[in-house]
Length: 261
Image 1 (cartoon, rainbow, N blue to C red):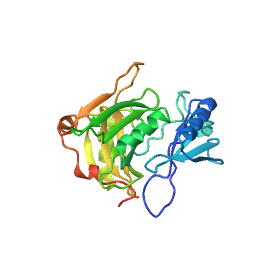
Image 2: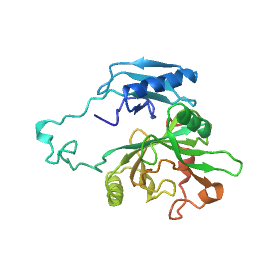
Image 3: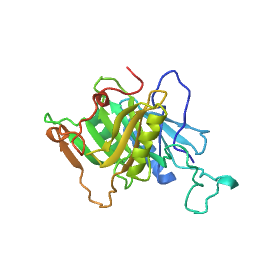
Image 4: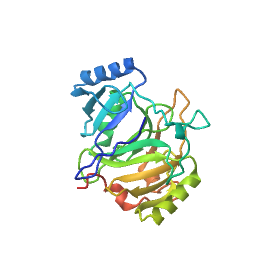
């Protein structure tokens, strides 16, 4: 039905992140797992486009919601597509993002939050960074076959419950370059110009939207099809090399998040 709700606020950040379960039974199992883990939550009703949801906070304070019942988008007659497996006719506006791809949270303890979503929500680890001291400041998790859906990275400021970025997917790598041209034309600040991530192999461009949240437009990546997939671990020395093509990560990437502190 939709991927994003915009809510007026006096500060930037993420209100809540909703994850859809695979069935009503799966929703009940996740709620039971949360209860058994000692996590308090509550049922919420009346959300636009989907049925009852169960809201709770992760270890760092990020607000989550789990739901299953969903209302699918039914386009008006003038937007009904010729290709029936598409949601609607192409409108050709702006960057033309197709879907929400992933959410990257900042955390005061990324490893703890990652262990939580793995043990309690059932997400699966695909890639991680392990420092020389053994700590893991970055962990990437998937819900299905796409290589990652939820990411936790260490908040260098020590703050809790912040957002690093949300990402929207486009069809091709060339769409990333086109997006960058559009951002420049419209005065949108580009924080990290188009390049390619070493971790998870996505092509990207990062910008700040008018409210201050960091937005990624991405393409590429990979699917996990093997049932016995083993997580990829990157060492401190390997990450020091930078992104896939050797360019260094911009400094603001390590401390800027929303709400701004």
